[in-house]
Image 1 (cartoon, rainbow, N blue to C red):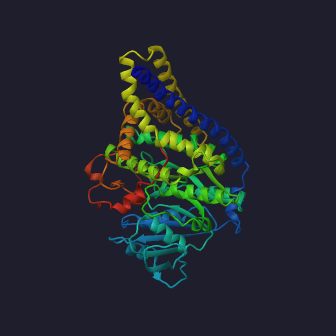
Image 2: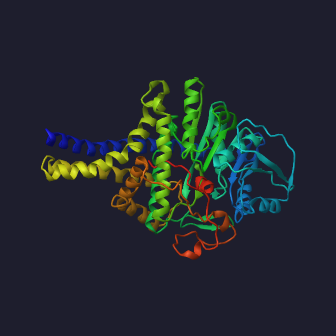
Image 3: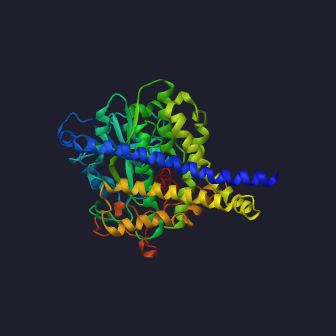
Amino acid sequence: MILRVLAWVGYATILFFVVMQAYLLFLALASAAALRRHHHLRRFGRVDEMLSTRTAPPVSILIPAYNEEAGIVDAVRSMSIVHYPRFEMVVINDGSTDGTLQALIEGFDLEQVRIPYRPDLPTEPIRAIYRARGAVDITVLDKENGGVSDAVNAGLNAARHPYILRTDADVVLDPDCLVHSMQRVVEDRERTVAVGGNVRPLNGSVLRLGHLVRATVPTPLIPRMQVLEYVRTFLGARPAWSALNALPLISGAFGVWRRSAVVAVGGFRTGHMGEDLDLTMRLHRHHLENRIPYRIVYEPSAVIWTEVPESLRVLRRQRVRWQRGLMTAVRDFMPITFNPRFGKVGMITWPGMVLFEYLAPVVEAAGWVVVPIAFLVGVINTTSLLWLLLLALGLGLLNSLIALLLDESYGYFNSPADTSRLIAMAVIENFGMRQLTVIWRLKAMLGRVGGGWGDMERRGVGQLATRPRPVHASSSSSSVRGQSSLSKRESERSARSLPPV
């Protein structure tokens, strides 16, 4: 009896991963169809009209900042030249202990003002409000420290426009990212409540004056693996979820939100390790429960670039945070799972997140123990085992190759060397690196990883804005010497939640 149970558990474990890869293959193929339609619409889209008309929906760009003295001025200047006719910038100084506020005052000739401030969302106290005297429409809030979500909520209170772009001070915006995302709003102003963008790793690429000059795939394995993961996530899954109107996540690094919709659900949740996932799912739940027509969509042409971890230690902290954020979300939204009342979100998207994200580390770790034991005692047929393993690995490789093929249409990685590195990574990641992430996520679920949220130790693209040099992987101490250590609040912002699908 025990041997029979062992055999069934072994086969079930492998079949779980076959089904998971088949599910991801379905998403990849659906994404391919959605991107084909998107490319057609983009080809005949009216971007010039969007850029030249004063009827384009105005946007407030919210930038939370904590201890960003070295790069905040360059970062804001870089974002201020985004191609869009009507926008304001709201920088939220979240109780910085360095000279961030003074750098902003001197860099943009700020003066303290008394303007209406709507406390629609509760936040830590606002100490002062500043406005720029120059041509750039910049408002700076100086507030008590409360964390990134609290800072964004304060920015929402101060925003004058009906749509907000929530981003970070340490990202590089593509000049047309805002106009591409707002095109999706203009398609259906009545129903569109959020638009997500395409986040890409910056490591290995060349920057000049705060703008991307050339995108390349990094040579080191750790950031290269993440390039492949981001391509799989943002092009191999999100277009399909968006086409179903069941997108589970608008990334915290770049997301356009209707201000009134965010306020209606209580804003960003403070203290949550996956605040962007939480807000997206609360918007779904709010509109479905109240039978309000809505759209939450993904725009692959709205691109931003961000640094990703370059060491195993920092990557571990990031993946632990992602898993803990997912754990909280699974608990909070469990009533949605397989609930037909919540439509495609309840029947397709969220069950997929629970089964193939939340439970995947547990099943895979169990397979490492059960399958070898079952094989050694002879209760699993060798031929069947090999075929199932090859099927699971083959489907996984196919999913990666489809995502890379979809990425070709955007033309960011044009050299044969870049393509070869990513194809090789699709094979290499299965032997060691994937297993490490499973261990980290499993430890997070067991509560055996302490130390808070962990420092991300990011260099910050704002500090590179005036230096024409590549951002490449480096482990030398000189690359970080003289920089102050990041606090828990800065780490919260830096280790933003992204889906590891």
